[in-house]
Length: 77
Image (cartoon, rainbow, N blue to C red; front, side, top):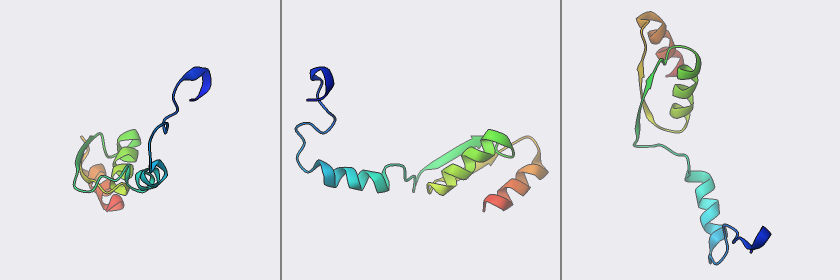
């Protein structure tokens, strides 16, 4: 039991340590997933697209400025 009598996240779980280790390496992997990012040529949209690519997702980029989008796609590839 944790503070104030509340159960801790691992209370009553056998083999929790092994499962937790597996989650650390695979929890945020996105292989086989597709993400659509709007506003992907600049700012937050571009940053999100980069993060999703880093996590293994297939990313579709959408933006209003075609030339800027092409430059972003080339940099992220």
